[in-house]
Amino acid sequence: MKPLLPTAMLAWALAGPAFAALDPATLIKLSTSVLKVEVIRAQGGYSLGSGVVVGADSVVTNCHVTRDARQIAVLQGGLRLPAQSQRVDAYHDLCLLHVRGVDGARAVAFGQAGQLAIGQPVTAVGHTAGALQSSLGEVLALHRLDGGRVIQSSNYFNSGASGGALFDAESRLVGILSFRLRGATAHYFAMPAEWLARQLRGAESEQPVGPRAPGELAFWEQPLEMQPFFLRAAVLENDGNWRALQPLAAEWVRRDATDPESWYLLGLALDRQDLPREARHALECSLAIAPDFEIARAELERLDRRLDLTPETTATSLPCRL
Image (cartoon, rainbow, N blue to C red; front, side):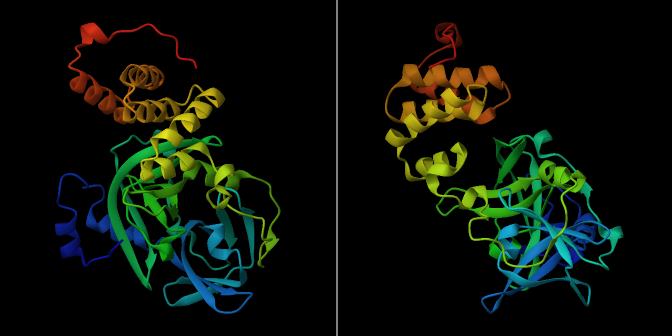
């Protein structure tokens, strides 16, 4: 995350065509909607995170930020406002705090992660090391899960930014910054705004602020074998473990043959094991489901160039099943 800059410097920072997502004035305005979250932990000490104003007296953050809380407060301007209660969706890592005094005029507009496209510019805003910071990046992948799309982007952020905001180019909240995976690849993930919108509409009763049960873990904190396919696959892809990725992707295809990501990763694993014919079939199936799935198209084109194939010699009619 890069520190938020004065307006003149922001104009320079956003001038490049690749990530010219938000103008400086808009970014500064949006930054007032992202608050610091302070947690006094039941076991002693405190931790910091970020939260986003989504309505009057309403701030969303990650449940892993507040899980051990004895007390929670948000900082709005020079005020430290205590949270009175919360709605908890631990599995999706979204906790909605009820904080009297939070200015509803700061509430962000909602977008939809499901309407994003790979390569689309996005801006992350959150608190790190006591300072509000921003990061420009782009959508790298959209992972299907529970009626939403978990956003993987190139926006770098550290742990203090957990619970911060991911905005699209129209200043709409599309995701809540949540977690990252270790490794050289850009594995930064945000929870989709659709999950939060569903939580806001829900009739769940308010719960008092207090430590959560040890078993209330987010999907990404579960034991590896219980995590969603896309996270298990990301670890294997990052390690270059193609032999293990192939059966995992094949199981994913059998569970959900309508997800283009499952076919793409199967094709990737097969190609890296020098099985080009089988890889082509899997990549074609991925594109048959989602013709605009650019990473699958790019991988298929690279494979065809390597094999010196032309469109006339690559057409197949094999069914997309295992």
